[in-house]
Length: 572
Image 1 (spheres, one colour):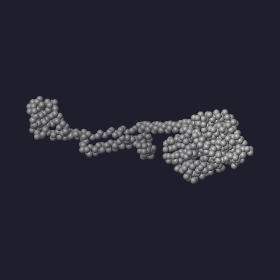
Image 2 (tube, rainbow, N blue to C red):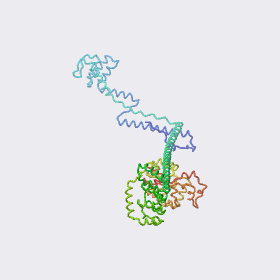
Image 3 (cartoon, helix red, strand yellow):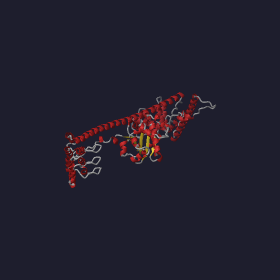
Image 4 (spheres, rainbow, N blue to C red):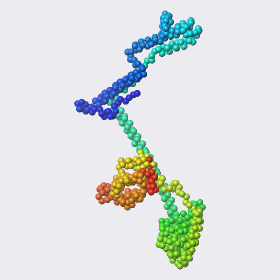
């Protein structure tokens, strides 16, 4: 096995830099020193391999012979062969191409006179050599005429006996040739090649990381675009619905019966033929005023009947707790008031002012109507209407695509290796602050070594108002994350809000909406005595845009207020 005997980097660094005279060594002198050390190491290695081979041979009982011991080995082999009996020697003589008759006879005599058990084999060999004639003895009952068949078997046995008599020669393992010493040019070329390989590996790793970063960035951008388009479409639909409802309320007040009937017919079609549409016909404005309340106030009795027939809530109050009956009485709309009483309007309900419908009725006739009304009858009418409205149309649950985008869209789960890229991309593209659900528990270490303003909620010194103000101001001024580490504590909105309200009222709202990045808001954090770098002239929008607010928690499931207001990055 080839062994790399070149100097390691540590050995090269330990090489002398100056000679005995104190002069600095030249490149050639350093190379010569390195080569001498290299050759010495190779010689030592070769000697170790030879000693190991000898020990192995001795342990196995193998003798390793040198070239000058060749003759001795041959002599030993010859004596071993003769020890096996005269049969092997006779076979060699018979099979030799230059063998003579005398030699044959001599070999036969020697074989016959030998007391070795191989003598019978020699006689058989002589008989076979003479053409298979004559008797073969020593084999015990051998027959004539079968020499051709027995010849091959006897010769093979004789050869095997001769081979077994010779000891197997042990071959020592050949040592691998030592590689030639590395020249200065080869070493320089090797070092340059290794440096190129390291540069290529760094370039490959950087390219792979850049591709991952761009992949995350594009995924976040596409998700943001999709959510914004979805929210925009939803806002447009809600805006169109609000315009439709406003027009419906105005028509109820103005007595435009055709508009009312057309809109009711449209809603009936949307609900697959349902006629009790209380949820739709009770559409309120910002003052909680319903179309029925508007029609009652204007005395539009026909429209009031249409709305009641389609499931309108008769006793629904507005922001001032005034019922449709109260408003009809206040406006002295006797016909409308009588109808509302007959279908379950409650004359006992008072407004915020403490006045009942009878108390605000301007005419004696209307006042007498309320005073002569039996309240028990109202209870019966209300119970009957509630029973009739049991089959009222109920809106279906919202589809998955109509769920609030903050719960599903503003979410990303990644490993710690990709967290830095995800944090930068979300900071640049998202209009929300970031909540990091640190399931790995290692994100806080990342923030400790990154240029950011980190405040731990569990350390009282970190959450002092002035400390928070300066930390937030510095993050905005120099464009870096402001991190509030909540660890494993509950993410209570009120507790976090009070923390920032101590710095400035409603500061958390500005942080969550990113309004804090506006000039008029971040300059409001500057106090007298702060560093002059916080003066208005030193602020730069290109730097401030890299600021982000990060809430770090070890809890896997954020509360609802965080899901609605933060971009959640879960690091597993």
